[in-house]
Length: 126
Image (cartoon, rainbow, N blue to C red; front, side):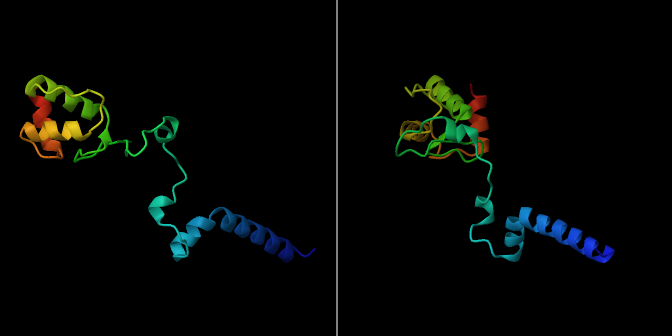
């Protein structure tokens, strides 16, 4: 075979391999992808898939503000502990921001959601 033909075949194989492995990225860049870019991640959160969730409740870990109905985590549990201690509420300290936690916050003079400054004030009182 001719030297030029061998080089052309090698280039064709290399370019074809790159296109094959990067096809989703190329589709996104060209605007041909049907799914939004934020949903195209193939990495899944192990915490979401490893534990059973109650039916009808959006039970998600939240580390962002504002804390609101449906959030859960250690910070919510700390807020529940402070509400029980300082405001004499009888909340289950389960780390779930449910209707009882929301009502306790409103009764303590806070809103239905907690911004970062309000969380800091609440936890500082402990």
